[in-house]
Image 1: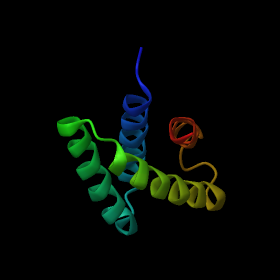
Image 2: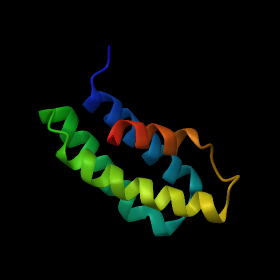
Image 3: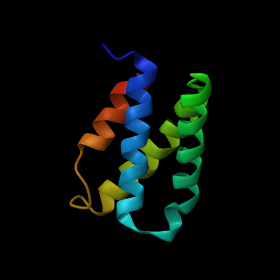
Image 4: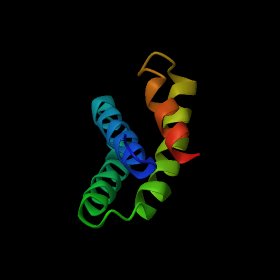
Length: 85
């Protein structure tokens, strides 16, 4: 079974992929931050960066979802919320 950090890693990857699909230059920074913390976690298994940027990504995705409910599925937000608890 996946541990909590692995679930968070997967949720951050899903958030990263979602931001990329939105093709908005405003998300360039969060995309690169998520790429960095995912790579860092894969290397050292320390989830601190995933937690920090997972929370930021969650807030940003909630804002996008509020303004454009059909832009992406709620699964991304749900997975982030569940893995950050």
